[in-house]
Every structure is written in structure tokens, then in C-alpha cells.
Amino acid sequence: MRLARRGNHEPSKEEVDMPDWLWILIALAALIILAAVVWTVLARRKREHLRERFGPEYDRAVDEHDDRRSAEAELERREKQRERLDIVPLAPESRERYLASWRDLQTGFVDEPERSVGEADRLVTEVMRERGYPMDEFDQRVADISVDHPNVVEHYRAAHGISIASDNGEASTEDLRQAVVHYRALFEELLEERETATEGVH
Image (cartoon, rainbow, N blue to C red; front, side):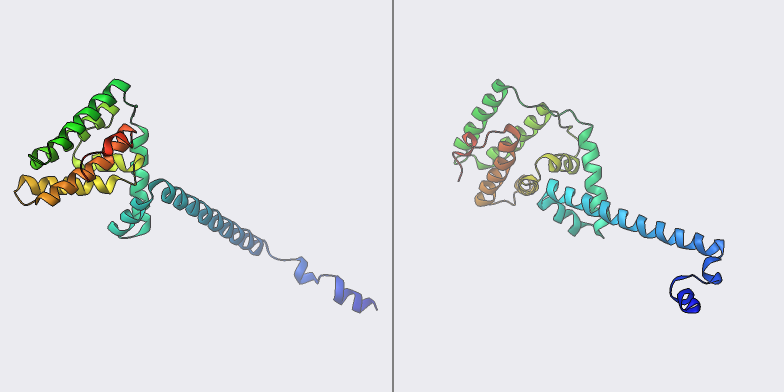
């Protein structure tokens, strides 16, 4: 009975006298596992945050970079850059002035489509400047806009591309119409005025 009890319940001397280095290894292994779990959870939360904030721009960034980690680092860089900016809403009078200018360019599209595209680009740039976006090179403007307006930043890229083609005499009238539509998508977001600016070019 005594032997059976020892065999079933009492640890052997070898089990009790585990060397210190083995305890250290066990503790280190536990810490490594815990760190891996924490890192995985934080990475997942970061990814979910970036996906939610950037929407389709997240997928575009992943496609453009060698790996997902590089893409997420770039999107985080954009967020930090945006946090340093003081973006303000437009005053009501400024909004009305820009809307009137937009209506004018749309009215003039039939007779002067190239001029309308140039005017659309100018208006978008002026609105961005007045709201507080820095007027750096185009790629940086796109990066700044992508943080606040990720769902329309691709319109800005498309409009800019057509505008360059127009300057080189390589854009058709339909291309120019599409450029105005693309500019309008961002223009409405910047003005926070979605309905008034949508009349005219369809």
C-alpha cells in the first residue's frame, strides 16, 4: 500500500530536484510563447484598424509593396503625417464660392472641355490648400488625402492621369468628361457637400 501510494501521488526525488537551468528554460519558453501571442494579437488589431481606416487603399498599398508589413508601415507613416496637419472645415462662404465655380466649369465643359479639366484640378487644389493640406508633390498630396478620404483618392489619381494626358494632347473628350467626374468625387468629399456639386456632367 505504501509503495502504491508513493507511486500514485508522491513525486520522485528526481522530479523534486529539477535543476535550476531547466526551470529557467521553462520560464523562457513561457515568456516566448506569451510574447508571440501578444504580438499576434497586436498585429491583428493593427491590421484591422488599417483596413477599416483605409478601405480599398489598404489593398492597393499591399499590391504595390513587396509584402504586407511594408504596406502597413507605409499606411502608418501616412497616419502620422496626417496627425501633424491642422485640417479645418471650409467656411460657409468659401463653400458657396467653390460650388459656384464648379457649376461654371461644368456649364463650360461642352465648349471647352480641356479648360474645364484644368479648372477642376485648380479648384480641388485650392480647396485642399484652404482646408490645410500641404501642397507638396502630387504623390504626397495623394498620401495625405488617402487618410481622410480613402474611398475617393483613386478618383484623384485617375483625374490627375487624364489631366497629364490632356496636357500632352492625348485625351479624348470622353476621357476629359471622366476626368471631371473623378475630380468631382474628391471635390464633394473636400467640401462635405455631396448633392449640390453633382449636377451638370454625367
